[in-house]
Amino acid sequence: MTNQKPWDRQEQARYMADVAQIMQVRARGEMPLALVRTYGCQQNVADGEKIKGMLEKMGFGFTEEEDQADLILFNTCAVREHAEDRIYGNVGALKNIKRRNPSLIIALCGCMMEQEHVAERIRKSFPFVNLVFGTHVIHRFPQMLREVLVDSHRVFERGDDSEDKTIIEGLPVHRDGNFRAWLTVMYGCDNFCSYCVVPYVRGRERSREPEAIEREFRELVAAGYKEITLLGQNVNSYGKGLENPISFAELLRRLDAVEGDYRIRFMTSHPKDATREMIDVIAGSRHISHHLHLPFQSGNDRVLKEMNRKYDRAKYLELISYCKEKIPDVSLTSDIIVGFPGETYEEFRDTVSLIEEVEFTSLFTFIYSPRVGTVAAKMPDPIPYEEKSRWFSELLQVQEEIAARRCTGMVGNEERVLVEEVNPKTGLLAGRTDGSIIVEFPGDLSLIGQFVNVRVTAARNWILRGEQISPKE
Ligand code: SAH
Ligand code: SF4
Image (cartoon, rainbow, N blue to C red; front, side, top):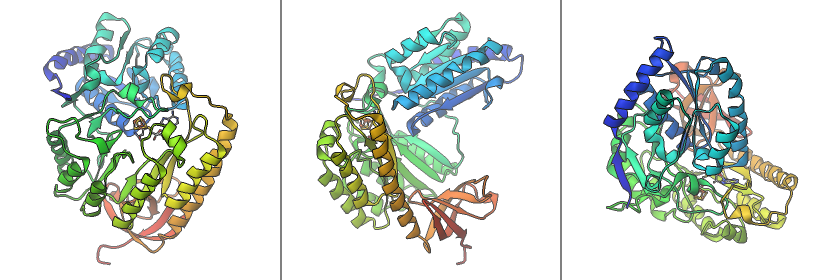
């Protein structure tokens, strides 16, 4: 059973008051500034917003300038080697900044720091880093920061055996956006796909109580948020460990019933647990986007088995065809891994043929990256990286043609677009359709953060051009 606990506000408040006082002196009466940089997935972004929430309560303001910061915190990602290398490079670059400003506090957190070998490397090779903490102990950030400041020693912390099964409710949040919000519905992952480090760094699967989720959801809608994205590594197993188990489909139904002008997105669905019931709920909903991100990783059954994905190509395609039947305008996206250990070119071609069959809107494609401690990292991997890169380009080319064809097919459509920003190069507004396709159109800056009806007039590769339809049309 998941252990759900409220944040120990009173205890942390004592530490926060100490930190606030010390930082004010250090910043000579000015507001101390923190630079918080988050890498990786939306779950990390959501964690970063909680860390910022706590920093705000400790009197910090925020900056993007390294030279102005009193505290620099990198919230790291461990999913691929490239992500980790980038962090090591960026941390190394902080050495000079610390030399210029010796009182600068440098902190590292997130998935990388939950791994022992990474913490060890930081301990040995980056002596100027003051604080290192993993994903399970975010709620103790004020306490750890105080220890760094008061005791002037380095602090390294990771979750203990119970903390990776616990949910702490009620942490303060500093949301980066004011019309799009992240809402975590569950933490951790129990799937242990053979290539993936996430179950090792994010702990066991645990769901928030639906009441807590609904409360936060209602607050977001009342505050005017227009797009709320529900987050979990495998949202389809939401609710399983709760005292009163409920399905993800049921949670969606409950949230969709909340009145308001908003849309719901969610990620990530896992084909082994995605249900027809969930697809039915989306089809009959008022607020849920007709967009399903359903990663299949590989189109070949032998590779899927080696990946420990627990579904096969036929089951995946069966789910997709049910989805297309119930939601004819559905937009499908997926994650794919190219060059899993032992994958042959013929097996890789099965992935390409699946892409051609399904016709995805867009894909997140990755070349396999070995991760310490995972099963796949010990498998023979004879294909050279250059060869895998060629396969990767081949796949991208096929997908680009599909995306371009799909976009061209949308010319003439009317789409409801949530306007996100202005494209500085073109001066056009840019937003996303319900199916998460980017549309650019001329319009007033005041429309940012609003839903606008747009007629699609042209397609440039995978980006649409359009014009605003006046409300009376
Ligand atoms: N929980 C989600 C995805 C989490 S990680 C799911 O199961 O779909 C996001 C994506 O990164 C994965 O879908 C996978 O495509 C990719 N990924 C994970 N581990 C990887 C590795 N070792 N090498 C390359 N890509 C990887
Ligand atoms: Fe990783 Fe698989 Fe869990 Fe997704 S479901 S986080 S790919 S182990």
